[in-house]
Image (cartoon, rainbow, N blue to C red; front, side):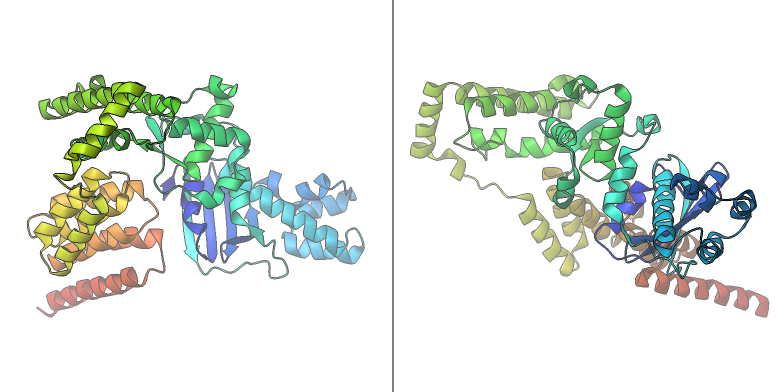
Amino acid sequence: MKIENISLFLRKFFNTSKTGRLIVDKDNIRREHYFFNSRLVYSVSNSTEERFGAFVKIFGIHLQNDIEKLLQTEYQSRIGKRLVELGFLDERILNDILVHQTKEIFIASLKLFHVEYRWESNRENPNKAFNADLPLVPLVVEGLRRIEDASPASHLLSAELEVSSQYPRELEKLLSEKELRLLKIIGAGTPPKPADLNLPEGKFLRMLFTLYALGFIKTRKASDLVEELREFHSKIGFVDHWELLGVDKKASTDEIKSAYFRLSKKFHPDRFNKEDKEIQEMASRVFREINSAYEVLSDPKRREEYLKTLVQEKPLKEREYISPETRFKEGKAMYNRKKYKEAAYLFNLAFQMEPDNPNYMFWKGVALSKLPGSEKEAEEVLLAYANRQPWDPKPMIILANMYAQRGLKTKALSFVNKALALDPEHPTALKLKKLLEGEKRKGLFKFFKK
């Protein structure tokens, strides 16, 4: 399979325990990385620059010519032991060399873009005498920071950027001061520029890709922005000015101003001039409401009068604002009662209100997969979810089940294989594959019996 950068695949290792081999191919160079419980234990490469002999020299160890020739041809675990036996190395130095080699080969894979890769579960380390036992996350962070040319990732980062809703806070401690500053700029809704951090274009792009690869930021598609507009529009009339701008009632004038500029830039009507008339009118109303809220809250006298009005008249309690989480729970209740049409509608409402939550999108697709005649829409929704969560096999399994139940065995099997490419040990996918392949063989047997 092809991938932009293997960090996007390895991200799913961060909170799980994976054991096996990752093969990475690029320009006739193959690198193999062996993992045990998501820790890197060994790496090997067919590149002459990454063989054992090259790393021996890095450690300042100079060998005789005949030994150097042997290093270029022999398998490294055997020659390493032989060098220890001959007294050229001791066991501690040999282990240090192998750890360094394993780390550098792995980082060499992380620095590449547009590679072919394959994951094989439960493949054991072929070098039984050695285990680097390196933690994965710090290695990935170091590898991303050592990328020399991140320009192949520029197309990934060309869209508008935003902080991910699934922000990996446990990794925040690994970020540098400048990376944290860049994250804060993106979180404020301001398009980041190299000048913000006094960085050249190349280093700035590499830093952006590091945040993207680790899951701190994501790109916002035009369709995502429309969904955000719909969600924001649904709040009008149900929330007060503070909640509309997303600030606390004790917010300072500067905080109110910052929230206003961020929202007015995000939902400016000019950004929706290519959408249909309904969306354009929605954007105009949202923009007016944002401006109105800011005009009131930025003026102390008007803010005080507005607060008194809320206390006296309480107009916002005439209708209750229903949260997306409530809509989602209502959808799950309908789904459990097998009212799939109603469930799909409620999941869709939740997603419109909170488009950053991919779980709502996923369950909308699940409900649609149960409705006859909605196969195309279900596939579109679940594949859209898969684009957001490329490491998750669940949408492929749902689609495989849907087509299997419709009797479309070949199409079902194609989605099963996609699920297994993401997680070769997934029990449901394995069971479904066995069932589907059994059905195909049974069909062929019936054909030949005739």
